[in-house]
Length: 436
View 1 (cartoon, rainbow, N blue to C red):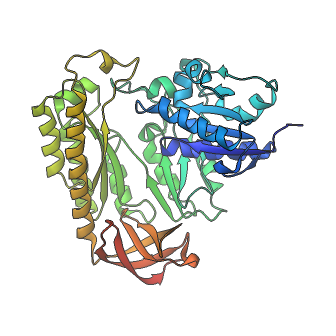
View 2: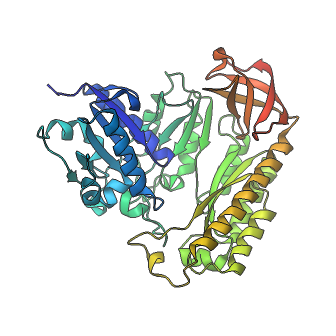
């Protein structure tokens, strides 16, 4: 008989982490742990961590302290990428009961039940190079859109990235197994599924299956919308773009990491494309889907990024018909090649360049939204109330608002996009419900 009754969760980082937290929560519920809100003083707290930035340690400590303020006697379990990379370091944080690595985190209940009552600071994290299992996951009930994990791990070993050390080799289920997992969502109220992974487009690596084959099979499911969360430009083949352009379910929204507009820096980063290939992908999308939304990841302050190289990135992005940027300020990460490179960019310069690109992102987003004003689109409404309004997203990822109406939550509406308000959200007029 397990001694605990309630569990609460906190997720740091990416959509992949959200899908895994949700799956772990369902597994714990099956083991007798009722899910409660983080501030309700749970018996067990599960913290899913990220390692993408240098703030992982600080964020983890803050969440642990917050959990223990709610219940000083709670068992605190830390999982995720940071837990795999530095399990001993995390285990020494005051109040941490258990740290579980990449392979162990999916058995939280069993590990909890095997703990001695007064144990603390225990950690279990196997060698990531030996991890071969793929654990399918999806989020459900946390937000309107559902994140479906179709791939894990990465074989690229970019010079700035610790993810292969935290997640292991690229792996996935086969198409049949993935469709079986995705079909579980057909009987729910899920309207939109976001495909996610560490390197999503690498689905099927080492087999005779690939991501495009998976996309074609997902299209057959009784689910309204599919969105590809992020895909490397070298894996976003023309056939995927062309299929999305004629699809009734895959939406015209792509998030394509760039990292730098300098071919010299891309080569130094060990990226698998150049700016010409990236440019070709963007213009192919806009040619086939003129209203398509294109998001971009970019790193600022990578070693060797001179003012000239940075301006190559700025000008390249400024000239491309993209819609928004996710700007990451480079931070040194242990056990990466970039951490040992010359040409370190001063932190104040990194911040100045980040600010320039964030301003550019706002301009790009504003221009994209302005290009959509007057169009009729379909919006999936979310549950949060913002004053007297509610928000939703069009198929091409325009954030819109309308007067709050509880009956619209998790439904589709045909709307006309009218004007951009002071918060950068597009006001809309509902034309009709688009529910089948």
